[in-house]
Amino acid sequence: MNIWRAVKKNAFLVLVAAAYIAVFIVRPGMGSASVKDSVYYLKEMIMIMPVIFVLTALLDTWVPKEKIMKYLGREAKAKGIVLSLVLGSISAGPIYAAFPLCVMLHKKGVPVRNLMIILSAWAVIKVPMLLNEMKFLGLQFMAVRWVLTVISILVFSWIAAKIIKDSDLPRHEDQNGLTVNQSACIGCALCEKNYPALFAMRHNKAFVKTVDMPVEKGRLIQTMDECPVQAIAYAAAPSDTRHAG
Image (tube, rainbow, N blue to C red; front, side, top):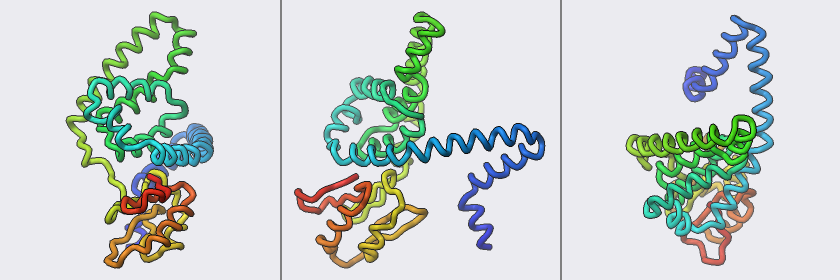
């Protein structure tokens, strides 16, 4: 029974493993090449993602929600759409590096449409990609492809916003003003060790327990300060307390 529960919990990983095994049986050469490619990308992710998590947590801390709402939120309208295109186009790194950033932006109030635009622009119209495209295929090809791609991004982002609501996206753990940024949390469990009455671990991520007792602010502030990625924020903390997303 425990094995079946573990399989259901990790269904996607089980399906991926089954696909690898099937490929190895049918075409061993292709299976070996697939494993090598997967190991390469896994190493790349291990090198890149910790840096992305730290940078995202710092941006979450330093950039006020009001600024994000002003330039990328719903009230930004056309300006928000243009800035989303620009943000995605000038960003560096592989597309999976954009996901923690988009989680942070969504928490700050960026709507689904603008998140879709950022991700799409990041994937297909980044500036370095356009420059290489112009070099090898010519300016006219690059320009036409860019215009058609931007139109497609705007259309599909509008459709996605009609289908996917903000409430459909995962939320952050939040109890009485105390928040754990799930995208920044690296699962070190220091918060659970320092304040076990308030924090616990679930799926290698910290979350805030539902407790009736008053928060020991001194202990909480110490726990927040010792978080290596500053993933804990307390809305009721004093203004001079260091916060993180």
